[in-house]
Image (cartoon, rainbow, N blue to C red):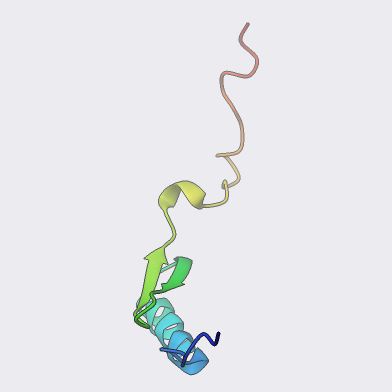
Length: 63
């Protein structure tokens, strides 16, 4: 049984990603529906890497 024709092309996904980046969106994930709709999910603020003073735990030394 074949999967049938693809509903999207790689270049369409690439264009969507480039457009989102140009708009200042940090991309967290890209999903493509069965219908071929491309959905770009932004990266959540909790996923960002810790900065120079954000990596320490102020409660670590307290017992």
